[in-house]
Image (cartoon, rainbow, N blue to C red; front, side, top):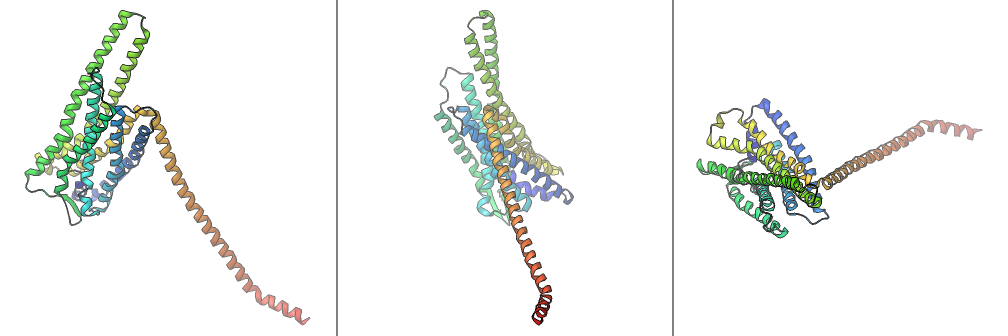
Length: 371
């Protein structure tokens, strides 16, 4: 993806008066996303992994999405911070072929997982009489998502070149970058959303129709058959909660990645190079892509809200204890060093006193011997 590896170049193009400010803002924003996103996504993965009841198909998809966000926050963003601060590529030729394709792979897996979520909910709600997706089918789908995403990203590995402490895209001609940008937009944004949008629209129509049917049925039946009505009401409420969660996740993805894709389409097919603030806007667009990895656990954590909050608390508690232990260890080291220095000073003072008093003590001894 022609994205993250251009950040350092964009900063270099900025005026020197703004460059330091942009670096500070960008690194600060990235650092916040790294810390909070890592803790939140790690807690969500832990909550789903440690669940006691049999995992549902939706929970496997949420786990896969949280895993991609965790890798983005804990690996992808810190590597970008290193490149931004050093203003060059310090990781060598091999990592040049790995880091940026890996970041692109995570984006592809995220959007493919969101698409699978929409299809799974459609199958469960709109066509309830067809067999539900089994756990085995869901696991196969997740593996297929990773494999297909890796295949789609593989051409990006070929075009990346390491030269003069820089990792950049080496295209042959002017048309190939445009074709690549267009393919990235279609495969990783437009096509998935063209599936997700109508799918959730049909799900909404189905849920609204079921709700209207149940209200009419309740009016005809009066107070009879309360148990059946409560069961149907609970099922409808559960479906609405899950669909709403998945829909919010898809909307967050669409909103966070729209500026990025729009910027690069404008760059390759428009006159973006004439706009003096293009590099500044591109930095914001890249940061917004990463912000999606921070938002996701707070959206999908509602499905396992109690366990997710517990996991967050445990992780924060452990981190706090580690910090306290390190601080306490440093304080104990300083205290021991201080006590040792104090002891050394006391011994030195005693030696000095003994040196000062020794002539007097010798004179006293001489007088005593004379007597």
